[in-house]
Image 1 (spheres, rainbow, N blue to C red):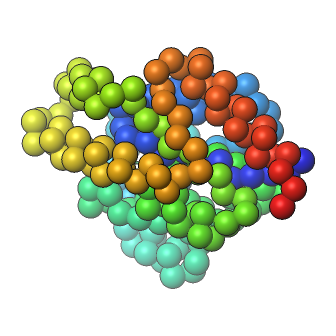
Image 2 (cartoon, rainbow, N blue to C red):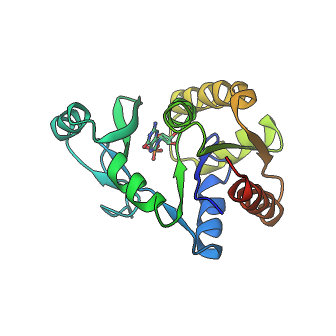
Length: 188
Ligand code: 5GP
């Protein structure tokens, strides 16, 4: 069995985070990579758990030092996957990245044989709009911007190895577990 890089993307509000937590809790052979970001921590977030929160100048230094497997900018902030962590972990385990489309495609380009790209989608756009509006944590313009981004991300689904519809959390989880199992067994 080989260790793989499981890259999970999907629009915000699709339930990715919950799915990822379940996958990690049920598989000791899977670890999540914690990204670095220059955005400020949100309430309840802890440095080193959701992200490593670093300054923009530190981030730039690390780009120059080739410390990121991939990085990207969202909403004016930088996000990057630490290369050394991923490479070290892959010797022992499979590594899960929860990143956006651009990051996922970069990961695939850098590790074509190992990266398995999985897009999690909502059952419908209406359902996702409802979920996002229900959060009520942002203004209308921000919501419109998020929905634009969602459409863009879903338009990229054909570039992924697998598309998993999150119509039911447990079912979607089992589908991803099955994908991981099969991919680990592939001889490449
Ligand atoms: P948030 O600020 O809501 O936590 O994340 C914003 C976006 O950044 C999400 O689409 C998330 O998937 C993406 N993101 C988080 N970490 C990384 C990373 O390491 N690389 C890239 N390319 N995107 C990331």
